[in-house]
Image (cartoon, rainbow over all chains, first blue to last red; front, side):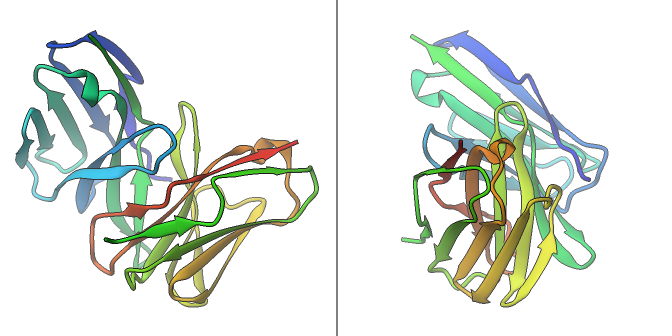
Length: 113
Length: 112
């Protein structure tokens, strides 16, 4: 079983603070994605990183893929209440020739005004 | 607008019942997945399918089966529901070779 560990599991911060969420695995992934999930809805893709060492920015969100393609981080600058949600990393790999998408344990973020 | 639709948002079933969860996608994707989501455990893969009538076990297939008779439809079956199958169930589809998974809105199943 491929395992993706996320940390922290839960984060409660004030608006304006910065934060970083980590996603780690012992496996190498062909790509890694970050999703955000709102209550009562399915996860929605934020970004995909493919190349080791890659850094992608999406407004106040910065995503990094580790050089060895086993880990990733999500950094949010000046968090806003609208950033509240469940953040999930997911690794894409091929098992016995078939594409499989495995998810991390999730980080629940609460941003208070 | 791409869409993955799950047949029910909420279901309550009795222990021992046979339960069908339906998922339909309109994007002509080859790959479809069923996950269950539980607090602190993230999304765990139950089964996936890469083509019509083809299926592969995920990480937690026990107590479940699946059916994919048409490309757009992927069904999850609980042969005999048990209380430990109370969970949020999410269906997703991905295009062949793609990286973005499109999810349905989820079905919250309660087994009493």
